[in-house]
Amino acid sequence: MVYHWNHLDWNFPDFNMKQDFEAKQNWKHAMPGGIKVDQQGNTYVSVPRWTPGIPATMNRIVCKNGRPLLEAFPSWQWNKAGNVSVLQSVLGYEIDERNRMWILDQGKIAYAPSPDGSQKLVLWDLNTNTLLESIKIPYEIAPYRTSFLNDLVVDNRHGFVYITDSGNGWPGHQLEGGIIVYNMKTKTFRRVLDRHYSTQDFPQFHFDIDNQLVFHDRPIRIGADGIALSADRSTLYYCQVTGRNLYSVDTALLRNFNTPLTQISESVRAVGSKGTTTDGMHADNQGNVFYTMLEGKGVGVYTPKTHRFHKLLSDDRMLWVDGVAFDQKGSIVFNSNKLHQMFDKPQTIDWNYPYNLIIWKSFVGNGIKSYTYAH
Image (cartoon, rainbow, N blue to C red; front, top):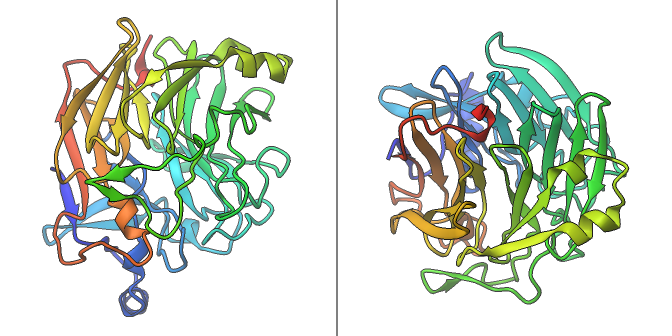
């Protein structure tokens, strides 16, 4: 256990901001989403703006008087809600082998439609702390009402980024999941597997955590979410939250924007059941795919060489393991955030419990790194 909180807190730049945050109890929906570690050892955490009042959506963890606090990254100005040219709501992001951060901005705040220009890919150089590029994701690629840009993987070898759109941006209405492919060279996007069975929720799917139904007041419906790229960059793996299967597709088909959409749809492989629902995934440089286990309360691994799924680790405090990543020292880093309790109506989370939100680390082997480092 690296860090833990009963609720998130920030290293605020001024007292009024801190006072407002505490008076309105905005921490009650401040959920640590994606977790990553850069080459300098800094730990980052995204906090999506699924409700109003989240101080900063992209953050670096700093310690003050022995307490872990979040600090807006790359700055407070870059996290100003309402300014579509800066970060609005971030869940998924990636740090590549060049120490560049690819930030996926969902655009929407509190599930309102994404304003034009708010959905984007922001590329930030962590070595020089400078903006390299900001690329708008247009309406025809990710509809502003239904889109829910979730996570991404980066292939610098071929010059592509793959993005999951969970399609649940309009709660209570239609789900429109899909995969988005970005070509770095031509700076163009293509949407594939739109509303394909593998990117939608599994029909009538319900699941429990600790024998408690996830969301008492409404069915949970989340399409394509977890995404992982094989070490050789040839296979894209993905899964929906409301389902247990792992799916894959050949990236050669995705990289060619002339490949017919029907051919891509017909080429999807159901790899098999993980035996658990999953949120985040991440592949290592050896070809293994690490996946979070929501029902299993931990992290599992799929080994393509043997076609086997197995549980790696578990703990009763690992309630809703969201994201998994790698440090530079042979460990996986992952977080648990009790999403199902925080966003239940009414909330079922005990805010006095010191281990509601946890960042974990586990050694998995010498030389084990992210897929981006595979030669």
